[in-house]
Length: 376
Image 1 (cartoon, rainbow, N blue to C red):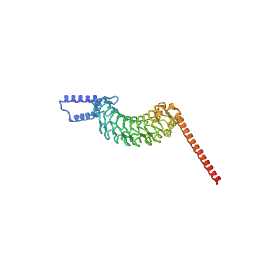
Image 2: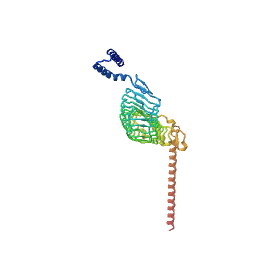
Image 3: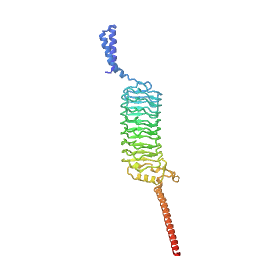
Image 4: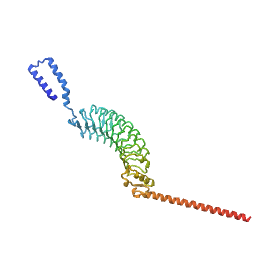
């Protein structure tokens, strides 16, 4: 029998008893009835679930939909059993320390397309079972140091399309189970060398459309499980020799649209993977023999595949600008060989000429010396 029915029957009995006894109830009986009602009250109230007035609450699935309601803060009275809360498309500016208090069951929190500029300390501390957090399309410039302190179950984190300029070593240090991290479309210039140290299970990392200028050794030291690394459309002009070495599972490396002019073959040879696809076009390549040799060697490495090799355009020298590297085949090295050969021959001829001249001078001096001796 449902608790509402029990409560209703109890009320009817009390009412009937009151009518029969003309309000002359035995105090003991009244006390027992009140005690029974107090026992039933929590169950009755749990059946009458609260829901924010501007949201839709789906009891069967524990889903609360508050999308595009013009909210400027996280609404109160969210049912404690909620496992998905969608606050996308509102005007929430801040998340306070008590905004999600008591939502122990929450697994999916979607807060994209708000006006959020600050996450207060401990604001997510109660979300220990959260698996997906979407904070994209906001105005976040930084993350608090304890941002992931209690988010040990988090598997996907979206922070794309914000205003972040730096990723420090403490913001992501407790995300041991994180699989997917999206930091694209920010203004990130620098990343602490230990920023990703705890992300040993990371499989997807998107850093596209930022302002990074270098890929440093040690930044990816713990990312042996990383499968996709997207770095396109940054300002990267240098990849240090050991930067890619730890990435044993990498299947896709996106480097289009950076500032690469030269690369070293050893840097990519360090990628000891089964199969890795490289995207390298839209960089200001200086097309010379060295570059052609590097790409030629990469093409012969079985597990490396340059997907867009035919789209790699030369930026310099001027006589090669606009031409594809692939269209030149071995012309660059042939031209360089011919130039070296011409220079070598020229130098050789100059040396021979100098030797001949020196010998001629020696003979002339010898002849003059002999003539002087004869005169005496």
